[in-house]
Length: 116
Length: 112
Image (tube, rainbow over all chains, first blue to last red; front, side, top):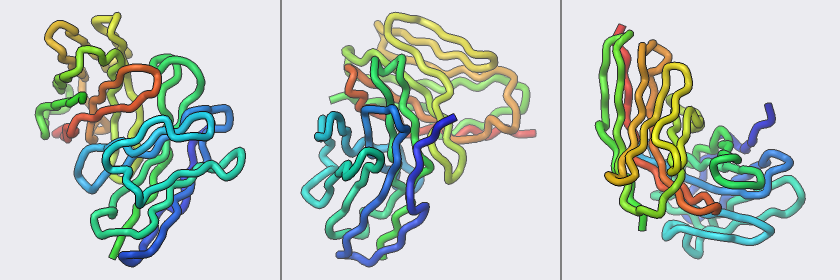
C-alpha cells in the first residue's frame, strides 16, 4: 500500500534557526496538508495546499511558516526562525480527488521537531 | 468556527468489555466525522468514518453512531482486546477542503 513518507523522523534545532520538514505525498494525490501535535495534545491543522497554492491555513500558520512543492513529488514545510513552542510532532497528510468521505487522509509517520 | 469536544479523556475497561467514546461538535454544517487511532509515537490511523447522511456504521468490532440533531457522535468498540489500547481522536469536517477539527483525544486502556 502506498504511504506518505516524511524526513527526517527527528530534527533537533536551536531557537532562531530555520528548519525544513520534508514530505513525499502519495503519488496520485492532489491535496496536501500539514498538521502538528504538541506532545500529549490534540492534532492541530496548519495548512492545506492544492493546485500549487495554499487553500486554507490556520492561525498557527503565521509568517514564520511557509510551504512549497518544489517538484512533482516533494511537499515541504519551512519554519523560518524556530521558537521553543514550535517543538512538536509535525504530520504531513495527503488525499486524492473526490469528497472527503471517498478520499480519506493518509498521514505520514511524522517529524518530531525539538527546539532547544 | 467549529469546536469538537471529546469525552472521556481517559477510559479504562476490562478486556472483553465494551468501550464508548463520545464527541460533540458545534458547527451544524459539518458533514464528515472520522475516528483515528494513534499508538504511542506513531501516526494517526483512520479506523472508521461516517458522513452526515448516515446514522450508524459498523466495521467488525467497531461502530460509529451520529446524531445530527444533537450534534454528537460516538465510537463503540466491543469485545476489547489489549491491542485496542491507544489514544483515539474524533474529528469533524465540512466541505471538500478537509480541514479536520480534532477532539482532544481519549486514552483507552484495556486491562487484562
